[in-house]
Image (cartoon, rainbow, N blue to C red; front, side, top):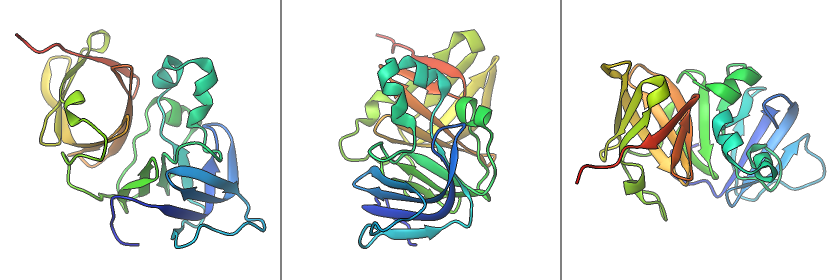
Length: 222
């Protein structure tokens, strides 16, 4: 599979799919037009035509969610994170077995374990590497809404999302405690820290949720 920003059709074969953080099924996961069309053992259905095929040999497909973001949504919308037909194709594929608590609270993945990151059907990372330069815009997204300083005062965190696609975090007064690159698509953010791990977050109603942090954007001076 070659690197590409978009995947019109994607077939993940022989995966252990976390349909929810606690429920798994062995089989395939198919994606068309940014949404999941099939999960589980293959029946008589035909795979999407001209799909990119990834045979993962039992690797784990996990939804990209954070519990604080899930609970920020109305109750009738919380099932939108499940990896079920009709839902957005937003997930990671990893060789590492991932617990329910990690999926819910702080999903961090190492590049050597990461096969793919998919957001709304677009392949954001492949074989542990990003598929596009940090700081590049995607159709319909306004990068400016992400740029700035995001603060969780209760956890003494400041996350600076810079226009060049870099980020830096101040934690408990320690500047540059974490630094790296980030990518955004729709309301999702994908981080690659300079120390080598991948992490994830989501923006809901102007609040950034990431690894248990609930961050509000600091107003700019003037």
